Image (cartoon, rainbow, N blue to C red; front, side):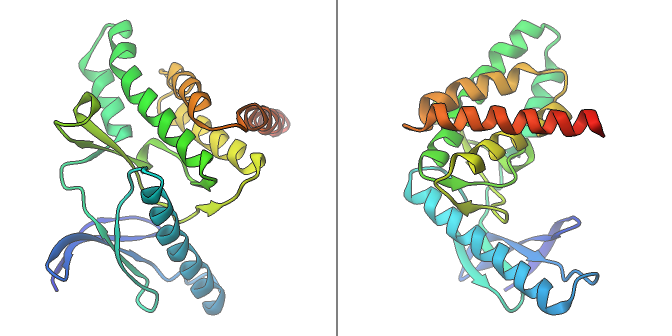
Length: 228
């Protein structure tokens, strides 16, 4: 097997390689020198297992996520499905805004994406899957002529994910997304409103409880911001 590095960040490296003849993305997590070795190994393995479980659960629920081809806990590597033509939702949104000067036309173009994202997160929470790090960098837009709007929306990076039926964790998930959107796409505050509206139509019978918890989490976050 050969592998070429395509991206490196604080948490690890991404390689483009192959596994048993299939092109794939290889995600290798770094050893954290500042942690006790046993604790670091425990956390790394926990996050790798979380990614495998969440991806499997999403796919079983009809939610697009990378197929995990192989997991090597000893080398801290995940071998997963590679979407070579995809771009992040972050880049998609930024490119859409940059290409269009009319704000109303930008809203119109982004509405379809927001509806898709809201529906997917709603379905994910209806199946009690908590992502843990919802940002537009962790959502892929993959061209597909046969799909609605000619692209698929794919959730990635489930290292902080877990399974939980509680409304609190779902509310926190939404709050993380809202804060990420306000930070990354501060001029397009309507994006979260569009996403949340569609989320409410897809998150299941606990919609009112989850939204109430989200409002509580948001209020606590604002209080912390005010206090500093």
